[in-house]
Length: 372
Image (tube, rainbow, N blue to C red; front, side):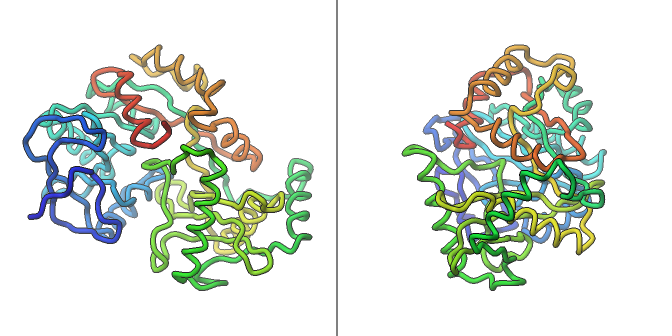
């Protein structure tokens, strides 16, 4: 068994069912206990199968991201997705398995963390996860809200969408056309180069020190990965923007509106045109829901952020970031984009710190996600 390098990143094109190992020195350079820590990724097909059977989280597909590990138990159907960083194991969502399996996985995952003298921070927990995590000693606060459209009841007609329809028509008049890769245009290496180029250009507009957010957002994957649906806008044969969508399983099955990128000089209304084109196709295919996913620090309310034992300090910090923290995360802009589609469901999502809130833990999460 070959050890991974000191970074917790895996080769982007390699997956293995066999555990690797890593010394507990993270990418931040901080040393932790010297024994080896097993790191494992389920084969993609196996992890995807478990999500199809057990996932009830709109962002569950993101657990398949490269660099995210899977904690499993022999003979047990289910896993916990996580990444280690700076004395913490950052868990994504609750466990993915039956309710009984989730309890077993969490208890064993806690032992796994404690043997390393690490703490667990679970992000994007849902309301249904709260009782188990409170029982296990987690301090839980609202971290934001997720937004969902019921496509069976969605229409862009009426006065609510006048402004959006005008912007979409404006984009069309400039000659912008939208295509789905793999259906209207090929999913080629050349196309992926164009998408990467747009991402690089988009990142430059965010500032000299801007980095792509990780962990709680998806990735483009490879051209052959048809699980991710990508719609592109082209003007005079040049791609000027795109949106990726990934599958969602569970009681509100459908698709997740994931990555969005556009050229800085793209005409107004381009992103609305891409999304509307995708919606119309999803409706034709009988897909029931379009999820916009989590907006951190958005939709914070006293009614939702009321879990017994919550951290009042974290609540104040989250409210402060929501109001004045655009330099950390553009929660207002994200929320405005999602609300203009008039979502039918707005659901809180939560963050849980094992044993109590920690400012260091919050800082480590921000480092991991590259928001600082």
